[in-house]
Image (cartoon, rainbow, N blue to C red; front, top):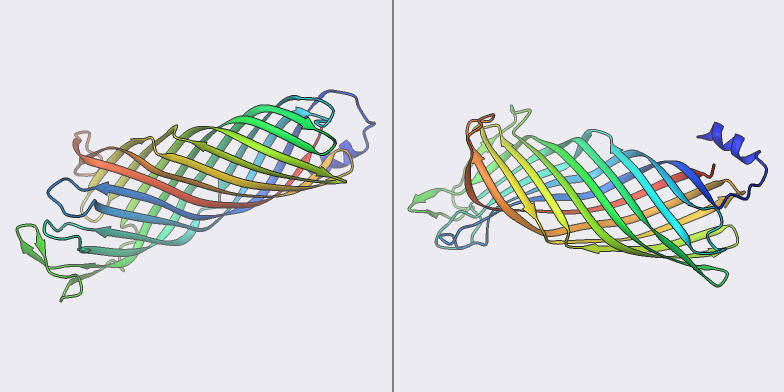
Length: 315
């Protein structure tokens, strides 16, 4: 990228209406994904199980390609951006598993905590829209954004605390002589893969001042699809979840410094939230079986902060 930048900076000023602008970036994801099993009517609690997977933190590298007007403040025009972000595998906090399995109250009955290892983290985002200049400084950009995300985790080691089962779907309090289990010898206790696909309308408002450009943007949509694959290795059970709907919210901020006519260095910050996504879950045993049976309703959620530095070159 730096080699191309030197070449681009030496070029004579052109009069093309549009330009391609590749960029490279480095950043940090910080947040959490959620896996939910909703309880049937025989249980008192709304949720039967909740599993939380930390992304605290995961570093990433990214590439993107932008196509837009060279001088967006001269007149309205089209723009589009394709970006790819790939996280570095490694430790990323904890994984917590909670169950509420009592038929007589909403007390917690099972709890376990494990080290969380992020095996895969993959973001692909595509947006396209139009830019409209107002005066000498303001730029309005309505657009459509599409996103695909994939996460893969492994819960390792850790320990569990389980309330005593008294029979008939009743349990003693979890702090009353519970059963405790150590997973210190288990390098893999549970695997979980979560894939998201979404489409959302968005709006951005940009402001130019001297060599600086700042932009606020916001996306919102119920157009969400999610698939989950949960493998419990200690008892060889598998769960497949197919979920949709809910709400996507994504506010963000972009601040850049224009280095000459061809280079741009920027700071990007955004928060992506997805919640209320629900659907059916299917169960099978042992892991790898092709025979699955419908077993209740599943849910998923996501909350992640994205902070990154970017170097862009206008070709």
